[in-house]
Amino acid sequence: MDPAGSSNGARVRRASPARRAERAVRAERAERVERVERGEKSERAERAEKLAERAADAKVDLGVLPKLLGYNLRRANQASWRTYVSFIGEHKIRPGLFSLMCLVRFNAGIAQIDLGTHLGVDKASIVALLDRLERAGLIERRRSTRDRRRQGISLTEAGAAEFEALMVQVRQLERHMASRFSKPELEQFLTYLRRMFA
Image (tube, rainbow, N blue to C red; front, top):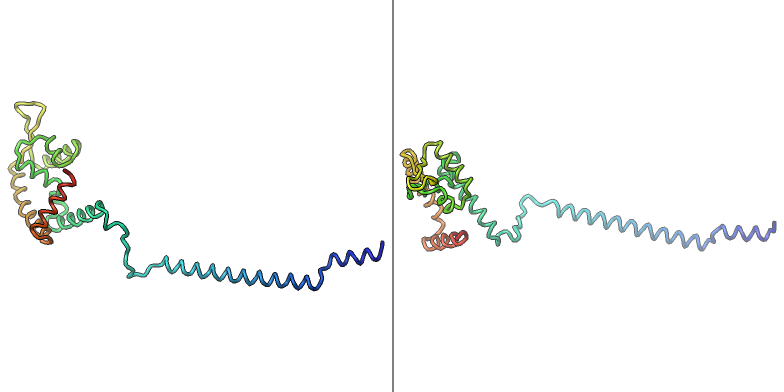
């Protein structure tokens, strides 16, 4: 084999000192860049953790909720229910049943379909409510003499007494809730609410 050939091959296999130095510089530079990137990632992760971990006294941003009609109506309804429970009790006559009894009290012999219409309740739900009041002995159903398909709803004596007792508590409840408004404000507020279901 040609000695010169062997010498040339050795030079090809071994990098020159200058090239080795250049490679070392590139490797060191790459390592520095990697360390910097790792540090930046660590800092970003730390910042993200700080953002994710809210302070205990941090103010809650409600976003668009305060401007949404549905949200405000729901919160008002929840507040109204809590006040009702505090004045009358959760296991007493509930607001829906009270409204039904009120219609029956001032419209003796009212038809089931009219109750549903003015309470915004479907037929099946009205039947269930009437059944509950009838079992409690507070209302009675009477078949119409003019139309056998029609039943008139009336309060029993016990139902009338229960309604009058409830009215005392409801008046107190209404005075409490209305105290937040002036008389013109309350009238205007009720007008706006009625417009929602007119």
